[in-house]
Length: 309
Image (cartoon, helix red, strand yellow):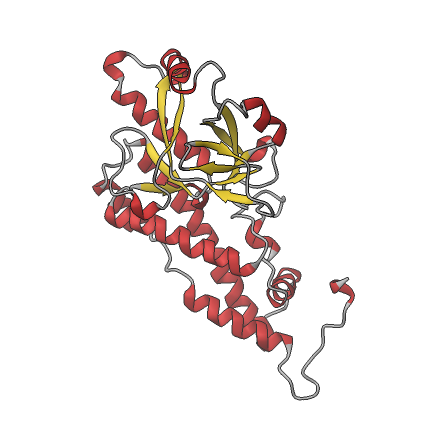
């Protein structure tokens, strides 16, 4: 319906929609992070141990994709300002960007490629999308300049599966003397007592801490240490910091029985977005249940963990 509305304005002396968008573009350009220079971040990655370390390879790939997003946003905003001034042609893409920014929506080509694949990340409003860009930049630069973080914000990665796979490779290499094979290593998860990432003072000896996940269809009781029903009218509940590592398949099956009893844990699927498809599936996290509400109860509830809500 909004597409059919007249897009004029400013005839009575008010500010036109083009002026509003031009001012917004200037504001975003000022807040946009600096470009990542490949030679610079390659040198910093070498100081972190070089490309022989799986997590460093993952960081390198993430920064490459993130730089593409920064370049796209900077070019589009610059061209849009010129187009509003009449110095370049207002293309269909620039017009779509103008309309989206005026409506506080994310421009289509900032989120998607020409073929419709995911180019960056999908969020409902431009404000949330740009805040995510700044938070991602902060995580990457902190990692580059200060070393590996104590806990990883999983939501802030283009390829969260790649982060977990790189971690699993590192754990497998640590157990080389025990002849662990990567194909036989599966994820081992534990919900920690850290409710906030600031409480994590040091990384684990093996594996990684991850934060930023939200429970859909349940909540986590810190007192009981298991899943409980979510509060009324609460769609999503934050999960405390999650510890993820790798373990040999046989050892993990034995550990499950000891840790969760005969009923076992609820194998909670973790998704990148609320759209629960294989395309956005990341991994399964084992969450403890009580005897009154076994894993089947949460399965029927459709309980899952989401990176973006």
